[in-house]
Amino acid sequence: MTTANKITILRILLIPFFVVEILYYVETGNEVHRLLAILSFAVASILDGVDGYVARRYNQWSELGTVLDPLADKLLLVSGIVVLSFNHAPHLATIPLWLTGTIIGRDFLLGVGVVVVRLVVGKVTVRPRYTGKIATVLQMVLVLWILLKWTEHHAAWLQIISLGAGLFTGASGLLYVWDFMKQIGTHPSSSPVKK
Image 1 (cartoon, rainbow, N blue to C red):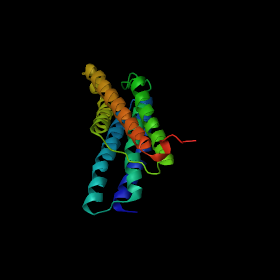
Image 2 (image 1 turned 90 degrees about the vertical axis):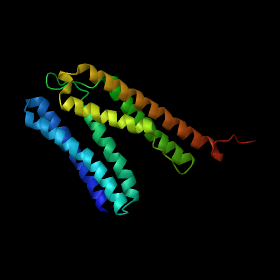
Image 3 (image 1 turned 135 degrees about the vertical axis):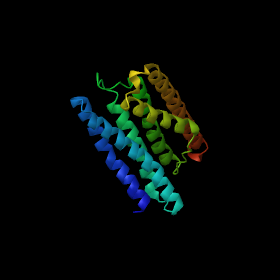
Image 4 (image 1 turned 60 degrees about the vertical axis):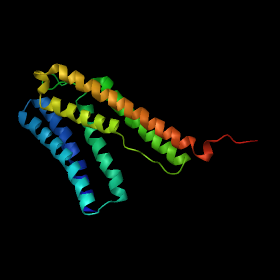
């Protein structure tokens, strides 16, 4: 259990706290809960960079870390997006359901693709692309935009960020599917069997 992995586990432990604070805020309207939700989201996001730096700087790469790190990112973002997809008026703006469906659908397809390629080929190569990174950044901005209540003065920006996040999320999902199809297509087991 490396230091980098311990930081990643701390990030995962912050997620339930983040979700509970949002739920307390929309139930009570107490600004302390909203500020704690923003703080926990910000700390978890900053620790993402910290655990990566620690892993590189002190050569703490591990198999566990390659699984936990992206899992922590996904859990944080998806939990925030799902919670903010419900109607919490008048306290918070709402993330459009089509965007939530796109994000969850992409992650579901990615999970199924990984399993299928692993079963057929034996090894999965997942190439991170800029479309996926941009999608992640836009999703994080969207969650923070709503929690910071910037939608009250800049409502049009919420639609623009949502649209951008949806486009990049969908594009990255299609590129992952394309990669998986290529990996399966080049494997001998996908060739027709001669009778």
